[in-house]
Amino acid sequence: MSGNVLTMYNGPRRVRGPGQAKVAAMVSFSDGSGPAPSAAYVERELPPGGISTYLAARRGGTRSFAVWADDQRRERVATLVTLSAGGGVARFQVLGARGEVIGTVIREKALRGRGLRTRWTVHQPGGFEAVGFKGRIVWWWTWWLLLPLMTVVLVMSVFDSVPGNEGGFARAPRRILWRANGRIPLEFRSKGDKLYVHAPGVDWRLGAALIALLRSFHAGAWDSVKQ
Image 1 (cartoon, rainbow, N blue to C red):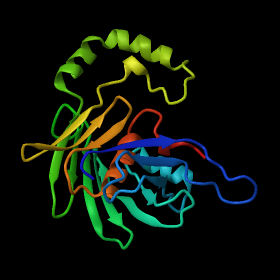
Image 2 (cartoon, helix red, strand yellow):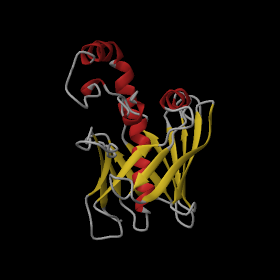
Image 3 (cartoon, helix red, strand yellow):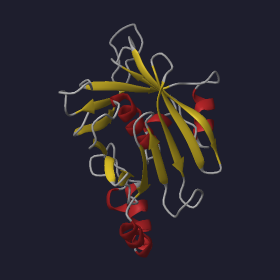
Image 4 (cartoon, rainbow, N blue to C red):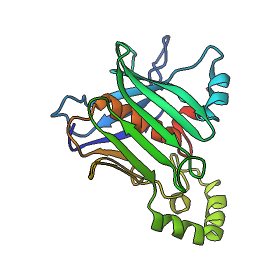
Protein backbone atom coordinates (compact mmCIF):
# COMPACT_ATOMS: atom_id res chain seq x y z
CA MET A 1 0.00 0.00 0.00
CA SER A 2 3.00 2.27 -0.48
CA GLY A 3 2.00 5.70 -1.72
CA ASN A 4 -1.67 5.11 -1.04
CA VAL A 5 -3.95 7.90 0.10
CA LEU A 6 -6.97 7.12 2.27
CA THR A 7 -9.94 9.46 2.39
CA MET A 8 -13.02 8.98 4.54
CA TYR A 9 -16.46 10.03 3.39
CA ASN A 10 -19.64 9.94 5.40
CA GLY A 11 -23.22 10.47 4.37
CA PRO A 12 -26.65 8.89 4.54
CA ARG A 13 -27.15 6.19 1.93
CA ARG A 14 -30.43 4.43 2.62
CA VAL A 15 -31.85 1.51 0.69
CA ARG A 16 -35.13 2.25 -1.00
CA GLY A 17 -38.12 0.36 0.27
CA PRO A 18 -37.91 -2.42 2.88
CA GLY A 19 -34.47 -3.40 4.07
CA GLN A 20 -31.58 -2.42 6.31
CA ALA A 21 -29.74 0.86 5.79
CA LYS A 22 -26.41 0.58 4.04
CA VAL A 23 -23.17 1.46 5.79
CA ALA A 24 -22.75 5.22 5.39
CA ALA A 25 -19.05 5.78 6.14
CA MET A 26 -16.67 4.87 3.32
CA VAL A 27 -12.87 4.88 3.17
CA SER A 28 -11.51 5.20 -0.36
CA PHE A 29 -8.04 4.14 -1.49
CA SER A 30 -6.39 6.18 -4.23
CA ASP A 31 -4.03 3.44 -5.46
CA GLY A 32 -5.66 0.17 -6.47
CA SER A 33 -2.44 -1.42 -7.72
CA GLY A 34 -1.59 -2.99 -4.36
CA PRO A 35 -3.50 -5.35 -2.08
CA ALA A 36 -5.88 -2.63 -0.92
CA PRO A 37 -9.37 -2.52 -2.44
CA SER A 38 -10.81 0.62 -3.98
CA ALA A 39 -12.94 1.21 -0.86
CA ALA A 40 -13.87 -0.16 2.56
CA TYR A 41 -16.87 0.66 4.73
CA VAL A 42 -16.72 1.57 8.42
CA GLU A 43 -19.53 1.37 10.95
CA ARG A 44 -19.61 1.78 14.70
CA GLU A 45 -20.32 -1.35 16.73
CA LEU A 46 -23.00 -0.70 19.33
CA PRO A 47 -22.85 -2.36 22.78
CA PRO A 48 -25.87 -4.11 24.32
CA GLY A 49 -27.17 -0.78 25.63
CA GLY A 50 -27.39 0.64 22.10
CA ILE A 51 -26.58 4.14 20.92
CA SER A 52 -26.95 5.86 24.29
CA THR A 53 -24.48 3.45 25.91
CA TYR A 54 -22.01 3.88 23.05
CA LEU A 55 -22.17 7.68 23.24
CA ALA A 56 -21.67 7.62 27.01
CA ALA A 57 -18.60 5.38 26.65
CA ARG A 58 -17.07 7.38 23.79
CA ARG A 59 -16.92 10.48 25.99
CA GLY A 60 -14.23 8.65 27.95
CA GLY A 61 -12.32 7.73 24.79
CA THR A 62 -13.89 4.35 23.99
CA ARG A 63 -14.45 3.48 20.33
CA SER A 64 -15.68 0.35 18.53
CA PHE A 65 -15.80 0.00 14.72
CA ALA A 66 -16.44 -2.69 12.15
CA VAL A 67 -14.70 -2.51 8.75
CA TRP A 68 -16.64 -4.11 5.90
CA ALA A 69 -15.66 -5.06 2.37
CA ASP A 70 -18.98 -3.71 1.07
CA ASP A 71 -21.73 -1.38 2.23
CA GLN A 72 -24.20 -4.22 2.74
CA ARG A 73 -22.14 -5.98 5.44
CA ARG A 74 -21.53 -9.17 3.49
CA GLU A 75 -17.90 -9.52 4.56
CA ARG A 76 -16.25 -8.17 7.69
CA VAL A 77 -12.55 -7.56 7.13
CA ALA A 78 -11.52 -5.93 10.42
CA THR A 79 -12.73 -4.73 13.80
CA LEU A 80 -11.42 -1.96 16.04
CA VAL A 81 -11.93 -2.49 19.78
CA THR A 82 -10.92 -0.52 22.86
CA LEU A 83 -8.54 -2.28 25.22
CA SER A 84 -8.63 0.46 27.85
CA ALA A 85 -9.61 4.11 28.17
CA GLY A 86 -9.15 6.44 31.09
CA GLY A 87 -7.06 9.33 32.35
CA GLY A 88 -6.73 10.74 28.86
CA VAL A 89 -5.05 7.59 27.50
CA ALA A 90 -6.90 5.14 25.26
CA ARG A 91 -5.56 1.89 23.80
CA PHE A 92 -7.12 0.32 20.74
CA GLN A 93 -6.59 -2.91 18.86
CA VAL A 94 -7.39 -3.70 15.23
CA LEU A 95 -8.36 -7.31 14.59
CA GLY A 96 -8.72 -9.24 11.37
CA ALA A 97 -11.71 -11.29 10.28
CA ARG A 98 -10.41 -14.33 12.22
CA GLY A 99 -9.56 -12.34 15.33
CA GLU A 100 -5.85 -11.99 14.54
CA VAL A 101 -4.12 -8.81 15.69
CA ILE A 102 -3.46 -6.44 12.79
CA GLY A 103 -2.23 -3.52 14.85
CA THR A 104 -2.52 -1.45 18.00
CA VAL A 105 -3.07 2.28 18.40
CA ILE A 106 -2.52 4.36 21.53
CA ARG A 107 -3.88 7.88 21.91
CA GLU A 108 -2.48 10.02 24.71
CA LYS A 109 -4.42 13.23 25.07
CA ALA A 110 -2.53 16.52 25.27
CA LEU A 111 -1.45 17.42 28.82
CA ARG A 112 -2.74 14.06 30.05
CA GLY A 113 -0.14 11.79 28.51
CA ARG A 114 3.53 12.49 27.89
CA GLY A 115 3.53 15.90 26.26
CA LEU A 116 1.86 19.17 25.37
CA ARG A 117 0.41 17.69 22.17
CA THR A 118 -1.82 14.68 21.63
CA ARG A 119 0.43 11.69 20.97
CA TRP A 120 -0.55 8.84 18.63
CA THR A 121 1.40 5.57 18.60
CA VAL A 122 0.73 3.02 15.85
CA HIS A 123 2.21 -0.48 15.94
CA GLN A 124 1.92 -3.21 13.33
CA PRO A 125 3.08 -6.66 14.54
CA GLY A 126 6.20 -7.76 12.71
CA GLY A 127 6.51 -4.29 11.21
CA PHE A 128 6.85 -0.79 12.54
CA GLU A 129 6.06 1.16 15.69
CA ALA A 130 5.58 4.81 14.82
CA VAL A 131 4.91 7.85 17.00
CA GLY A 132 3.18 11.00 15.84
CA PHE A 133 2.08 14.25 17.50
CA LYS A 134 -0.96 16.29 16.59
CA GLY A 135 0.04 19.59 15.00
CA ARG A 136 3.42 21.27 14.68
CA ILE A 137 4.79 23.23 17.63
CA VAL A 138 5.03 26.47 15.63
CA TRP A 139 1.36 26.28 14.62
CA TRP A 140 0.29 25.56 18.19
CA TRP A 141 2.11 28.70 19.37
CA THR A 142 0.37 30.66 16.63
CA TRP A 143 -2.95 29.14 17.68
CA TRP A 144 -2.57 30.22 21.32
CA LEU A 145 -1.39 33.70 20.39
CA LEU A 146 -4.45 34.16 18.17
CA LEU A 147 -6.85 32.53 20.62
CA PRO A 148 -8.98 35.67 21.19
CA LEU A 149 -9.57 35.96 17.44
CA MET A 150 -10.13 32.21 17.21
CA THR A 151 -12.90 32.45 19.80
CA VAL A 152 -14.80 34.93 17.64
CA VAL A 153 -14.35 32.76 14.56
CA LEU A 154 -15.50 29.68 16.44
CA VAL A 155 -18.68 31.44 17.56
CA MET A 156 -19.35 32.49 13.98
CA SER A 157 -18.71 28.95 12.72
CA VAL A 158 -21.56 27.65 14.88
CA PHE A 159 -23.93 29.43 12.52
CA ASP A 160 -22.20 28.10 9.43
CA SER A 161 -24.51 25.53 7.83
CA VAL A 162 -22.02 24.19 5.29
CA PRO A 163 -21.99 20.36 5.67
CA GLY A 164 -18.71 19.01 6.99
CA ASN A 165 -17.44 22.41 8.15
CA GLU A 166 -15.29 22.07 11.26
CA GLY A 167 -14.53 25.71 11.87
CA GLY A 168 -12.16 26.35 8.93
CA PHE A 169 -9.49 28.83 10.05
CA ALA A 170 -10.59 28.37 13.68
CA ARG A 171 -9.60 24.72 13.79
CA ALA A 172 -6.66 23.74 15.96
CA PRO A 173 -3.58 22.25 14.20
CA ARG A 174 -4.30 18.63 13.27
CA ARG A 175 -1.51 17.39 10.99
CA ILE A 176 0.26 14.26 12.25
CA LEU A 177 3.61 12.88 11.06
CA TRP A 178 4.40 9.41 12.36
CA ARG A 179 8.10 8.63 12.66
CA ALA A 180 9.76 5.23 12.97
CA ASN A 181 13.51 4.70 12.77
CA GLY A 182 14.06 8.00 11.01
CA ARG A 183 11.32 7.39 8.45
CA ILE A 184 7.75 8.63 8.06
CA PRO A 185 5.50 5.63 7.32
CA LEU A 186 2.23 7.50 7.89
CA GLU A 187 1.02 11.07 7.61
CA PHE A 188 -2.37 12.64 8.31
CA ARG A 189 -3.00 15.96 6.60
CA SER A 190 -5.79 18.16 7.87
CA LYS A 191 -6.39 19.58 4.40
CA GLY A 192 -8.86 17.11 2.98
CA ASP A 193 -8.61 14.88 6.08
CA LYS A 194 -6.41 12.40 4.23
CA LEU A 195 -4.14 9.65 5.55
CA TYR A 196 -1.01 9.15 3.44
CA VAL A 197 0.80 5.82 3.56
CA HIS A 198 4.44 6.35 2.60
CA ALA A 199 5.90 2.99 3.62
CA PRO A 200 5.36 -0.37 1.92
CA GLY A 201 3.95 -3.23 3.94
CA VAL A 202 1.36 -1.23 5.87
CA ASP A 203 -1.78 -3.34 6.21
CA TRP A 204 -4.62 -1.56 4.41
CA ARG A 205 -7.06 -2.72 7.10
CA LEU A 206 -4.99 -0.96 9.74
CA GLY A 207 -5.01 2.16 7.58
CA ALA A 208 -8.79 2.08 7.19
CA ALA A 209 -9.31 1.63 10.94
CA LEU A 210 -6.79 4.37 11.73
CA ILE A 211 -8.38 7.08 9.60
CA ALA A 212 -11.81 6.17 11.00
CA LEU A 213 -10.38 6.44 14.51
CA LEU A 214 -8.73 9.80 13.80
CA ARG A 215 -11.92 11.19 12.32
CA SER A 216 -13.88 10.03 15.38
CA PHE A 217 -11.86 12.46 17.52
CA HIS A 218 -12.54 15.49 15.30
CA ALA A 219 -15.32 18.04 15.50
CA GLY A 220 -18.50 16.64 14.00
CA ALA A 221 -17.22 13.08 14.49
CA TRP A 222 -18.90 10.56 12.22
CA ASP A 223 -19.58 8.10 15.06
CA SER A 224 -21.23 10.64 17.36
CA VAL A 225 -24.63 10.76 15.65
CA LYS A 226 -27.60 10.01 17.91
CA GLN A 227 -29.41 7.72 15.50
